[in-house]
Length: 257
Ligand SMILES: [Zn+2]
Image: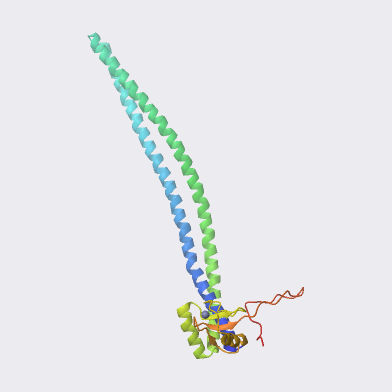
């Protein structure tokens, strides 16, 4: 195979790996941020339950003090009833006592409802706190994993970048400049051609003469349609004998003559 072609294939691999690693490195903090947002959500649930409990407790205190007021009124009415002169005054005081007793019962019902609400909110709070604990442990684990992954990716990125620079230095300058132009335009600079005689990237059939030339893999030839540099990939070899490694179809092993 033409040495430029061979190195271009390796260069494309390096370019793709570098892009993939850069994307992965950029995505890891986003993943951590998404989990942190979830954490904030659960924290808000805990706060909401706490606030609801506090409000219900405050209501209860208010109701208890209302009951006390009514009870004081009742004893005051009872005292007054001992001193009344007319039956009518007496009836009016009894009526007041009945009203106050009704008001006390209404307050007591509200207190019971409030206690049930507090019970529910306490359950909510406990559940959210358990979730928060679990999520906090998870996020610490995810963060540690993300850090380790990023470090590993950056190491690989440095290796691929070094390999990329070395390859670019070895490829004929005009060819690498052409590759760069097509890469910028089409997101890839070279394309495989299979047995069907089509450019695998733009899917356009090569002219028979071009296909014959590409099959030899000894020259740098561009696709008439998309401009990518073409290289021929022979079809995978039929069933290999047991014990032998299967043929790697992604890397043309030798020129087909
Ligand atoms: Zn093409």
